[in-house]
Length: 250
Image (cartoon, rainbow, N blue to C red; front, side):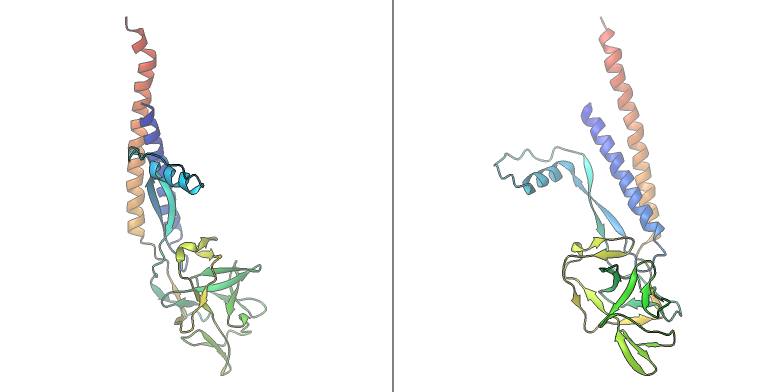
């Protein structure tokens, strides 16, 4: 009977976590460069065995097999596929065509993002609002005026002279990126600066969230959550009867 409680409760927690992840995806549908997240579930027994081995315990054991029906969220998987490009007409908007990330200096921490919805601060530097200054080949990109021209390779030209070039970085393994806010990442891995990047000006990359898929997933998880909740009530009633009524039978 206890196994039923554990199974249903874990199922409810898993479905609620799926709802939370999908809801966050929908909430960021208009966040430029946002990459959707996907819940990765695992059999709890397998997950427990993996953790057991990773903790440095190498004693031999006999495999009992997959007997657990409990599912749990093992991790959130970020889907890094490119979103659609949208022309905005804003001179400080940029979108990377292909792989790679913009780099932003945020209080001496370098953040990586696909969000190219930039602005100029009061000092004339190219910035990502609430994050920091956009990085070029020479560090912080100073433009000083909104009368500039941006070339496809990321070069910034003012009065006919190239003053800097927007840097685009890429990583061998995106799984090493750690989320740092919506659409922002940090990494301990040293990135590679791309030499032949393509950047569209007056354009931003939309999020890669498919609203229809996310809403469908939310409704499916909500139904599963309600079903598990009703079944849990039935289990509770049966257990109550077993404890209070069966014992009275002569």
